[in-house]
Length: 190
Image (cartoon, rainbow, N blue to C red; front, side, top):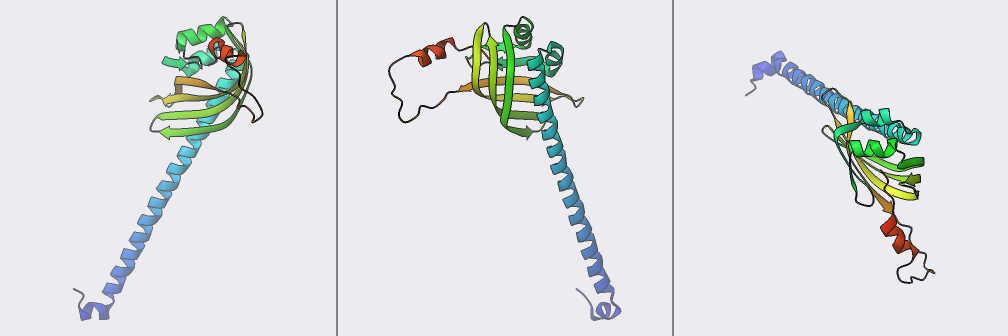
């Protein structure tokens, strides 16, 4: 309870002023911490986007050394045809030229951060060959990176799905034709 004598002496007002100053400092510190967290997430997203570009460039140039370094030892990739590849299998496909990518244009990239994991979803216009078959089309993919305790990011998982062109309103659908055949013969990308 505040006594009349404290009010006359001004000790209550100095206590209130001190409390306001401390509260203001606390709010300012909390806001600064929030800003630092936001900036760190932004920087991490940019770092992962740069890794995506590094991977794209390595694929286009057939840079096996870079790809080997970027893939985790436990990497699992699932191609658009549902085929599963380990790190060794993926690198062998590139080394033996079973997969040759001549063009990759990325767009609509999103990076979601969850603790030490980055989940990238992206759309890619791809051209090249896979096991001797022409590859040309639009794909949606998910690539997952894990950050190691050293701070380095490694690709742990990948999956691609082909985006099929939609039919225009005037097109007529007639039984299983070339499109259905292409589905069963579709080459692997990823």
